[in-house]
Length: 129
Image (cartoon, rainbow, N blue to C red):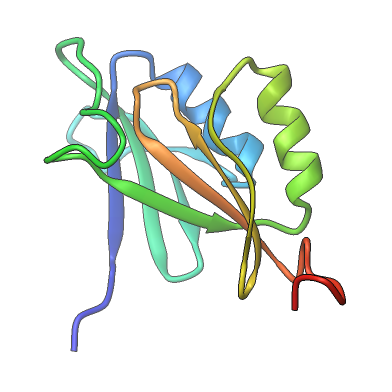
């Protein structure tokens, strides 16, 4: 059996990337393993999430393109997170979609990665259950 242990993101603008993920609820702190690579890190459940400065610029491949990644998060309030990401001028890829577990939106992070944001039970009512 495999478990996800970490998600490591490299960004030419780590402050912007960190701010984006903080708006989703990732509580980053500065971390240093003694190798001089100070970075933002947090544990999301049992998964360690880190943002490092990229030594070279670049952006992620387009959403659903070969080589791209797709990270998803559950949040307490999809509406609040959506409003915060809109205030940050984050690019919305997919607006509210009803799913069997609730509702989701998909945004693009500052480096071009698609990020799914979900809320369990959101958008579910008598017409959608």
